[in-house]
Image (cartoon, rainbow, N blue to C red):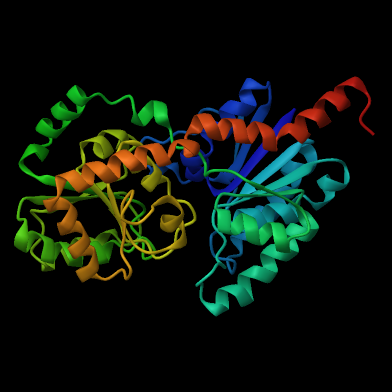
Length: 386
């Protein structure tokens, strides 16, 4: 059996789909990947766990001519590859791939699409429903054998509105072996080596872009350090807003209490070494960084979006602020800085709540989702198929 995984960029496969690849390999499946090579931007990430990689010039913008080139290259790969399953991800990767796989579907190839968070949801701008909903429904109804959703809200909507098989799974799998392998002794040493012992450490992980909204966290820190000058905010990630954030931090005089870490593949050390995790994202599907924090027993302060609400129960496993303003973020952060008992209570509850989202459980869900493909393979090998 052969499976082609497709996404706009290769880092997406590296970061989110290793549990899927591992599960497929355990069942003797050959896995290929088609995505744009952006790994030079992601220090330490390597797509070395699949059999073949195709560098396809996807662009995130639907207006880019590169997507026409990507379509032609991908169609040739799919038509010649004779894949049992083509599994696509990300908005542009999903659209281009499903168009390119039309002919292959006629010859038995199954096409799966994982929606990592629809742009249309309760509370989304009206234009999102006008633009994105008809596109997703059309492609689901006509070009997709299975839509895989990772939020309950998306699952309910897609099950009701889309004319195809719709599955739900608990995210892409938080790596419990990686994040729980860090011992208290290792964490203590890491804090000492990085001089974190002198600080109350707050961690925010994510691409430095407008949606992740780190600018609000910088503004909130101006209020936090007035009452708690020993606080250190770590911003892990890289992206288009990096220079703007640097300028903002310097202009605010916060260079001593905010560090831009860049891109890291050893985030398990930083999560375990942190005292609190924060996120101010405007929009999220089901954020892996929040799952990682909760798995490590960390209290979280997060903005009010559907991805955060699905993971965090307000005042039970963390704090979801009603309005993502610098004042509310600062107020919620200061409350947890000053109350270690509440931080521990939230963290302990979070660790229990997040168990369905671990890689171990996700692997079971993926096996169920791919069961049709294994049946297809066995029938094909015995000559019973068609």
